[in-house]
Image 1 (tube, rainbow, N blue to C red):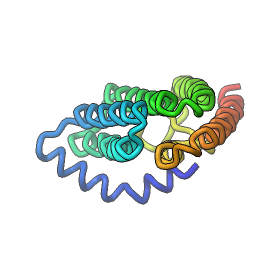
Image 2: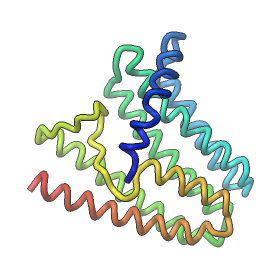
Image 3: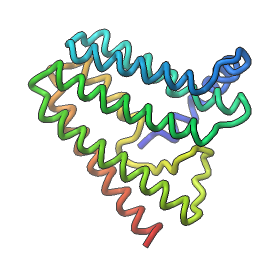
Image 4: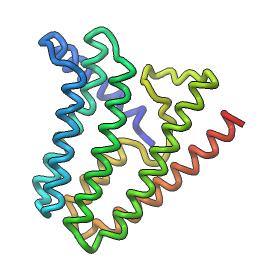
Length: 199
């Protein structure tokens, strides 16, 4: 819902940091890999109910996720492979973290399972719409590999909700159920957009 505004606010700092890393020979795929490894470590910590570690590792993992694009641009531009790696890493990070929460907090298992299903459908609809929009020649205008459409539940909201789930584990079931509803609304928004763009 607020990804565009958050990206605009963080862009100057991320571009500076990305340029600094690129000048030192850091490759964008390496940055993506660091991010997904930190997210998987966060999932393991959540599975062990080490909530403080899970929170710290999850937040740390989002820094490389925001830096791989700026590193790529500073190094001469992103590639289709880099775009694919970025979205694949994001899906792995989100899914693994929710699975870790489900293992670490049995009271939240059903809610986390439902949340994972909504992630699966939402991610699939985003990628399918991106491919179809490309086929129709729709210009995203943001320079990214995939056509990211706005919705109620986007990356920023996911970062916040995942953080709250491990910061407040007693509230995890309610948070997971609530966010699952938000993702379902987002799926509905993408369906409506797909009908308008592709029908």
